[in-house]
Image (tube, rainbow, N blue to C red; front, side, top):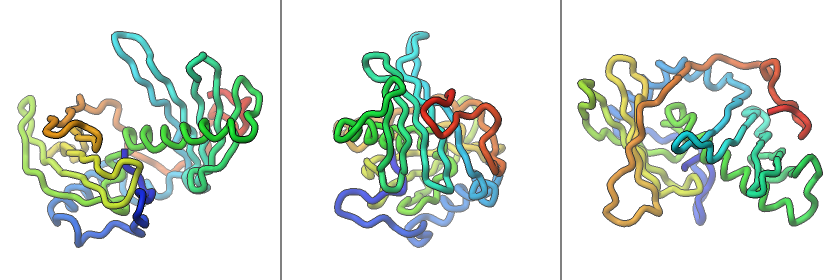
Length: 232
């Protein structure tokens, strides 16, 4: 998944460059942002708190909880390791430095590095799955008009997203399906950079429970504290 971080061998772009994207695709991305609450509200959103859950055949395979302070670049990450032990990471997502705890005890020295890296990589992946419609004009993103497609009686405008020197996997490609009535991104498809040659794009199901954003000046009551004893 892509995010605004330099890919190996390249410096991260400072801002979205409209000269490298299609005007119609940019206009569609702007409609999506407006439908989600607007750029001003998104930039004023201080905290993002969510769980990333993977389920298959009624069984939960993964459940990762993120509390992200967007203004300070700080993350609290809650997970369980392969042995079922609870893990909490407090991470600076800019420097990738922080603290890691397992079963409430701090993990010291070099043993903490894999936990910090896992938390960072999960943050990159999970926030992109959640927030991709807000990130269509992130630095380093290129937008292309990919035509229209009819699905279940609805016409969608498709926008192709490619990336330049950003993210952990800048070779990924995503197609956003924009609903012409609501202007929301109802679904997407993607090809990952490690997919075999000539692979068909993976198609997602409809996005559910979409909500517009509003500024969040402080964590909501009941949000986890900044320390590893907080409830997630």
